[in-house]
Amino acid sequence: RSPPPLSALSQVLRLERNRRVGVVFPLQKLARYLAPGVDATRFGLFRPGLDALQRAEGFFRSGRHHAIDYVSSAVRMDHAPPPALPEVCFIGRSNVGKSSLIRALFSLSPEVEVRVSKTPGHTKKMNFFKVGKYFTLVDMPGYGYRAPQDFVEMVEAYLQERHNLKRTFLLVDGVVGLQKTDHIAVEMLEDFGLPYVMVLTKIDRASRGVLLKNVLEIQEFVKEKTQGCFPQLFLVSSLEFSGVHLLRCFVAHVTGNLPTVEAS
Image (cartoon, rainbow, N blue to C red; front, top):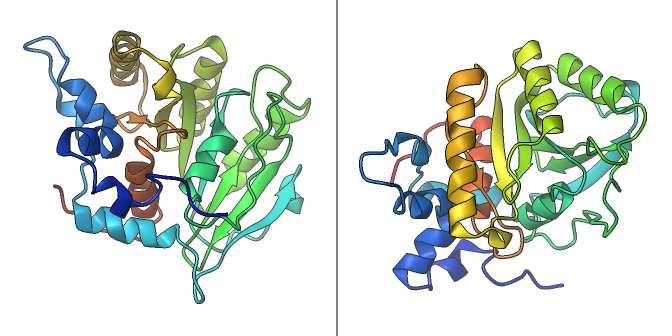
């Protein structure tokens, strides 16, 4: 299976400049449409240069000396693999596009099997993916509609006990914005004092106006109501690969594999 178009940075760099910026930095492209005088600082806090983006891509590309593997699934913490590497986890509502995003992140290693279901709420277990000797990525069960009954016990135990967890990625539907169940997830992460990031998914399905409105509302919420959330949102489309290259870079950065990220 060959990687899809635009999954590699080399393909993106062949695009004309405006489209290239839209794929790599979708939030900064959106910032052009802000009303005059609106503070755009939070639109470009994490802005790596080309070298950092290319180095980050290397972690997500398997090779002879760098295997990317699905390790195991767990419904309880005593089934989880040992916490040997820095770890990131992805959580969000059922049908927010978690598994699709993880598949997009690993698209340069098509042998990595990330199951994406047409049925919401398919992920019932914590799925662990080992990225060489560098970090582990965890796909968590979706909350809300059709969440597994023991979701709270499973996820709360993981978040509280997993001492190698470096960052939680909270996925929010870019079309509908923050929902009641997302607020509950935010409260949980805040209560546990964990650092997390908000990722807006499915941005290809939202009109520019809707997306900008949701981004501004969520940024205001993050600024006023949260302590542990990274101030910049990440916008992604698993279909068009917008924001996927930047997210790879941020994952590599927070797991300690890209300690210095030179700004572009």
